[in-house]
Image (cartoon, rainbow, N blue to C red; front, top):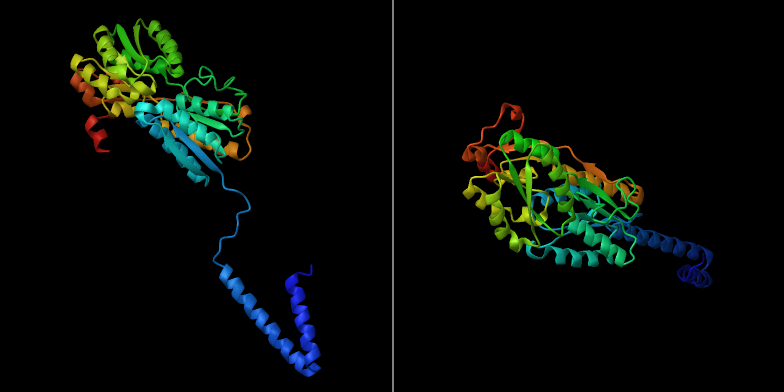
Length: 358
């Protein structure tokens, strides 16, 4: 193609040819060609340090964590590990403890209309916010959730096998059968077990139904105490603790995030609190049939990578993780005068002191 620049060179050459005889013309032409080659070489050198534009756009993912507490922090750690391994960019937002629901709604609305390829939501309230925001914005970006115990109850999938929406992820099905068996092993004479829960959290409602069935099967009465938000926790636990022989936690975010409130009350009443995962045992719960939340997050991240590479989220089954391991805080057992039976010799043993040193 004859460009304006090339045409200019031709006109210059024609004028030179007219001005000089053939011998001089050839000499001038050689000088011009040499000059052009040198200029081209310098141009190539000046551009050598510039980054070539990528053939493909690097994926960029928004991560929305409901609030800062150890279980969810571990989930996010695993998610980021998987994304980093795949070379996928990510941006993290975490709701504040006192305003997590409102924060998540606000963050999700912004993420849904921003230039992200996906939203990864950690915990049920974050997943609900992300799913609703994407739907309201009529956006096509997928939502992948992590640590949602009952995504059907939460209203974000149609079924575990075929989610049906532009949304799938991993479910942390807490091992409630194993938890009740652990409680019974450590407290064979237990009669009443208490649980605190947030009335608006779908995970907790679903887990209480399962927990009640497991308790009934071994002759334990389950006594529940609901709260609407964290401000009610101190009075609720103060009311519940005198009625029970132990407390057990679910994966309720409000309760777990403010666990110190009732741990102190339970210690004063000399009754144990059982955690729903290892980080809670490190902080003063007696024991737990625990999930590995870093591993759960990593599995979620790998699922997200598959979807970014073309897998259909609507047809990607929800991955339910149920494998648990037993962990016991020997410091707390000693304080409470609880003997660890031989049947739990293989359990992971930790102390509050060693956990604080990590």
